[in-house]
Amino acid sequence: MTPLPDCFCPVDGTRVPTDSLAWCCPVCRGPLDLDFAPTPATLKSLTGRVNSLWRYTECLPLPAPSVSLGEGRTPLVPLREGVSAKLDFLMPTLSFKDRGAVVLAELALRLRPRRVVADSSGNAGTAVAAYCARARLSCTVYVPEGTSAKKLEQIGAHGARVEVVPGDREAAASAAREAADEEGTFYASHVFNPYFLHGTKTYVHEVWEELGGRLPEVLVVPVGNGTLLLGAALGVAELHAAGLIDRRPALYAVQSAAVAPLAHAWHEGADDLVGVTPAAPTFAEGIAIPRPPRARQILRAVRESGGTFLTVTEDQLRHAQTDLASQGLYVEPTGVACWAALRDLPLTPRTAVLPLCGAGQKSPLPTTP
Image (cartoon, rainbow, N blue to C red; front, side, top):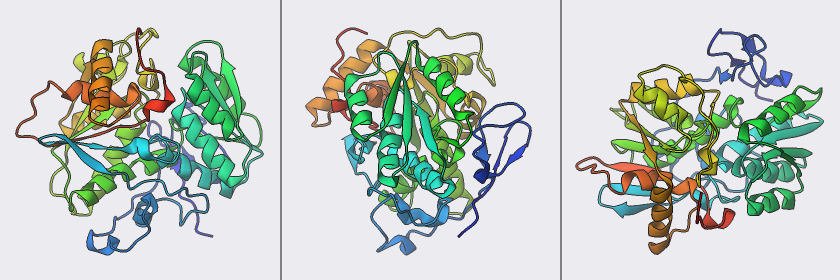
């Protein structure tokens, strides 16, 4: 069996064997990164490979999967001249989180824990539940009260135990982390476990392939915990290091104006979060994260790319969802955040790609926040 790459703490360098079930740095309790620097395949060599994200096998830290549901290879469609949307809501569980969840499930299958736990506002928990069902792994998902009933229904349908935690998204995360410290538990954290990021980076590999071996000038990404943005940064770095792109696209990070700790830190010129961001109601529940654990990494990735942060109001989210629906694309409020930010933003002559991350069936149509 191919050995697994080890994890390490990006803050203090502490190394953590992947097979230890440790979910964070034992010194600072922060998220981990993966000691893994692959070389992607050339465009020509991808011809004829499996039609899923596993076609980028050289760049994935695990070999061919046993629990795949055919995730990845979602279509790219134009929204207006120069701007295209990648339809990641057409994944098996109807959100982009499948990209990372399948990698976590494969890892858990190798480690054979007694149980798997996760925390989520809905989509990540659904994805982890689905792939754990596929792998025949016991799974518990901690969610905050107020989570969409449709998402709760979907998680439960996959056989996972749902624990509704009183309070906000951070309360659910705290409950899951407490459970994660119990012996024999694998914490399928889309935030702390770096294997998840190596799944989400396939988003960029797909865009690169679909555009014939190039990337747009701008990648626009919704940001709460930053798992898609950091995955995108990984994918861009891999393609650039291999000489498969000659320039790196700018990363535009989008947050809800109601909960925008990263955008606030960015506009303050800070390298980390500034002050305390209170939890506030927003249609974009999936990115309503007051204290993202990888804040420093997110801010650094955007800064190094030459990108920026954008925020959107509740009215912008509502109008963007209606606009996309009128174009045949029914997407949940969190998933429309990037289009809400770009609709009236002149990008000419720039080209941009944005993800539509979650299906509209997952949440009710917004009326009031």
